[in-house]
Image 1: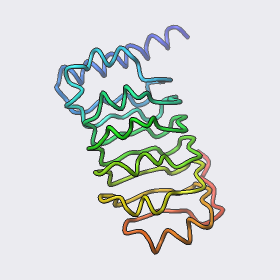
Image 2 (image 1 turned 90 degrees about the horizontal axis):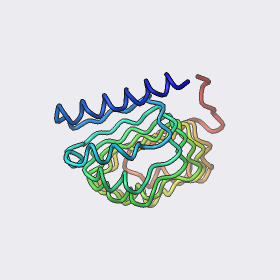
Image 3 (image 1 turned 45 degrees about the vertical axis):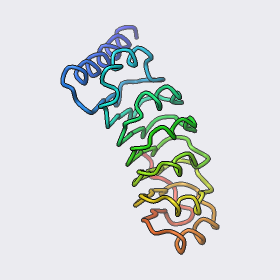
Image 4 (image 1 turned 60 degrees about the vertical axis):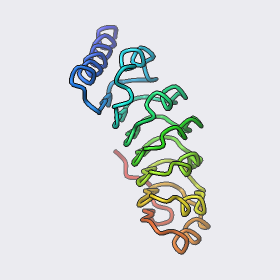
Length: 184
């Protein structure tokens, strides 16, 4: 077990160093068995955090993200958080004023993360395979850049299904009522 933990830590360190050394605008920490965003990474990336535009933390074991994460990486354009155990976002997600796409699919959201509706550049929201019942249709309809929201395989209530279509000017993907996500 310690050997596997050591390998995971080494993998994270290697990926962070690659980002710093190459001057890349991408930090890819997908499938690194992370249960939280490592605090030490903030220090390592402090001189380049403003130039990071895409972070992938997909398929880890994250239960939450901190406000520090949101404010440190405020220049993000894309954030991939699919396949974790997230159930909410910190209010500081409002710092991500340049965010164009967020993938929160296959997490544990029961409530729609309404903070996303305040992001002016947000074009794409993926919340597929969560447990969301209600959606703030009016707030979504008022989002200036929103082009697509994926809510497939969520137990959306009938009201959302009826009210949403005439109010929205973007693509809203929904599964037929009662449909369950396919087993992996």
